[in-house]
Image 1: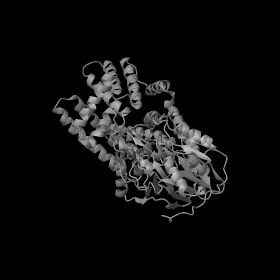
Image 2 (image 1 turned 135 degrees about the vertical axis):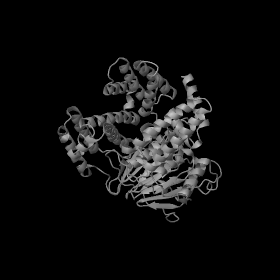
Image 3 (image 1 turned 90 degrees about the horizontal axis):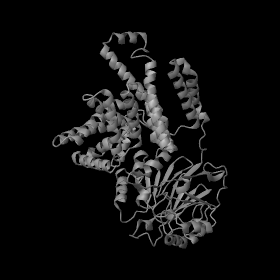
Image 4 (image 1 turned 180 degrees about the vertical axis):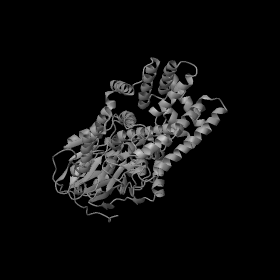
Length: 624
């Protein structure tokens, strides 16, 4: 493995040296599975064009490489041996690029095909698919819940089902009206064969899209109908790019430079095509995951498809397909939605960082911090954005940044690219680090209204009132660490619920607040424990003043800081806080607030009566 890792590193360095900077990241992703350097905006463009799978080493890439190697070796040896050798070459290639799961599954399918070909037997694609799935599940049973596993096998099943349906309906023109069928039969044989192949490709693409769309909606809240036609342009371009990139790695100078220029031209064309398709109206949609009714309809549709594939008669699938259509039409009446006027507040499990979303009673959204972004880990893209899409958020009316550390602002760019942000409330750290400087530049470029928060300011949105408790005057002009300028907020939802969030403020900041604000004005139903549970925050006096019913600690599993600290947990226990919720153990915490019933933890039955401390503060400087 050390030898293979070294080979991958040398290949990566060679591509970095030979490819122009604007295509280097995509080129390395296409052939070496290095996706970390691809900009988020480019990822989004490919996803919206239905071509996101082209940026990952998948069955298409492995299949292209395997078939090409088999064809070349077939000139030198028997077809069976060539197939076996191509499977070995692909296995080494997959190991070299780090053995991504989708590539391993494709390599297993290719190995089964090669073994069947070497023995002179037909390769049964469904049996090979089942064997690959079984091996994957034996290696790791939990892989069944991963989006990559589900999309990979669903796509293959949909592709095969689409081809089978097309064959059952007849060859090109076989199911067309009589006049059109007669005209097609008059065409030359080569043209009819090409029409048949195009029909098969269209059927395969349609089947793959229909099979993967519900899974994509569930995991990513995104569906791209453009995939129905974009693969006709994307697949050939990727094949050409992979060939040129392989020549770049294999040919000696100066031929490698010529191949690199060819690869760069193809990649630029691929990027341009993805951008053009993503701009087509209706090419992609943000959707909610299928409801229980939706999944039942999908199951009925699958039963109808299975009956058609088994017996080849459309009439055999009419009953389940009709039942599925009836459920889809009745879904609006059967679905259960949030009652009007009910709000949601979720503290998200973003690892070692902070992010919370709030839905007002009128359906508008507030985001408190955006989660961390470190390397390939982007909580904004992977956690916050899917949650917003799950609830159907189309815009963020207010983004509240507690302070500009990367574990709070890192995910903003990915979120804003998909769900536009209209206002930002920020304390304005006087010494911006590079990440914060980029954030400020982005808000200015996009015309986002930037609000400088000062103690006593108040921002209202529908039934939500946000009061800025701090930073206290003693620290407003500080030029030290960003934590010392953390916004400290009290959020009232209606007149029945309060939430206090102090970001990463310290115990000194808490004592400063206690000296400025009346004790009653600090009481809250929910307290976000300061600084991820660090021992330097959440003091005893502070806990007595806030007196929360629920305390939530946002920290990462097995984080290097030891958060939450044992002393903080002891202080929470000594303060008799009824419920302490840790995101590193219990995941995301969502609370529902109802103007009549009070509030409760989402998913639980019991409602708490509206709080008597949820009232407007007397010290304020006016609304913004």
